[in-house]
Image (cartoon, rainbow, N blue to C red):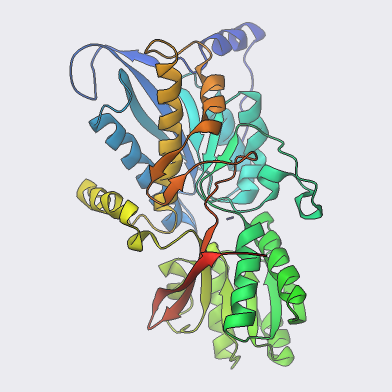
Length: 410
């Protein structure tokens, strides 16, 4: 799923900061328990903590925090205490870039989890890469982030070796959805709408391409300004086109109101979208009256996974007042990816972090493999997760219910 910079003080100070980069900080007190000094490793977490997407963002932050606390409780990395530093990007690319610059400028921050939005990730990748700092997103789904701008032409090229993600991409999500709606639900015509953002436009594009390939008819396309909230113009076009399905490439803050206005106008076609609609907020913003709408989500339903039982139990015990939401499991696994990479680097350096820990941690992430909340966690040559599962959810009686899961075979 789902776009401020610091001024360098002096060349001498910058050089000094680079010398200290990623060495962590030595604490006199062992905050994870036991005797002796520990090295505190800070993991930056960038996500929207305020604004329309804050419900999902807070779930990402809390789940990352839980992973750090679990690692400390287990003393998973000997001599290392993990701590997260959350920063609010408000789902804005400019804020994300500022946050990335702030994190890379802090020698205690060795890696970062996030962001939520693909367009925000675009603004951060070069900053992290220049600093040789690992970035693991639990939620970005645009394929170009890992495979380059020409990925759809078969020209896949990894631009940033420091970038990884624990969720699969829209190269899988869009076609999987098209296949399900066309073949299983027998919906033969579609009106495609997107919000012109990196995530939304990309997802709508992969969906439309596969739907047409299958023989489906695209009876209209349009774009919306997600900030507008009045979608009467596009609703009129959709009503006139009489599609079997309305596919929306975008996020729930606009997707919910769009669905509500479509229903009010008498449009019978369900509205479907990607993982950015898979939230109770989507139903709430639709007025609680959008039964029959759909959303897809990367991976299998966390609540149905044996591997997630401990995560769910520990999340409840930790007392977070907000739910882990759509990407909680993926955020935990993204944070644990960092923890595993740190563990590998420490073990290979006689039990301590080396001076060039950032670069070594980023490199170590490529070979990380473990049993995570969302299943087996590992990465391919592009830094993408090897887990390609997708689940379709349908709104039934005011709740999103999983109705189909699988792997796209196209």
